[in-house]
Amino acid sequence: MSVIPSDIKVRKQSRCIELSYRNTGEQDECYQLSFELLRVYSPSAEVRGHGVGNEVLQHGKKDVVVLNIEPAGNYALKLIFDDGHDSGLYDWKYLYHLCQSQDAMWQEYLTKLDTAGLSRESNVIQFKAL
Image (cartoon, rainbow, N blue to C red; front, top):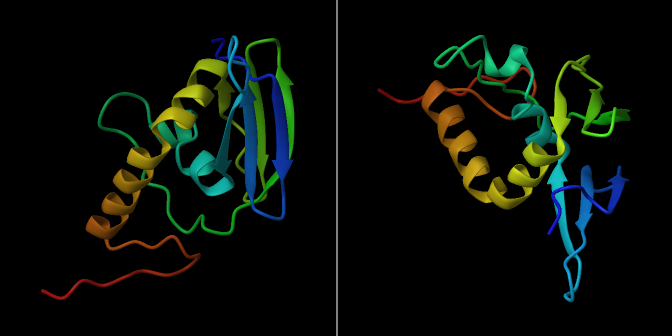
């Protein structure tokens, strides 16, 4: 199976991007990636940092919206979010990785937020009892 999606749809109502992949002889695989997951796992240096251990935990992105999607050559998509973020290029391999790993990545994200006392909500900080 190719990691290049055969179809890409933006589902503004459900706040996700739907990616379909053709399987040889089988039914197409279809995945939905939430705008929030795409934003908090952006492949940009702003999120990933400049080297291992320099990642920046994103928070307050629950209601983020993808305003536009632009092709980046034949190898990636550039997503433009309503919070001004537009610097990550999501190559086909990374998008497929997100599709395959989103449940584990989402749980990891929620754990990191909880540990840091941060929230998915905008302008909210959670406090942990000592």
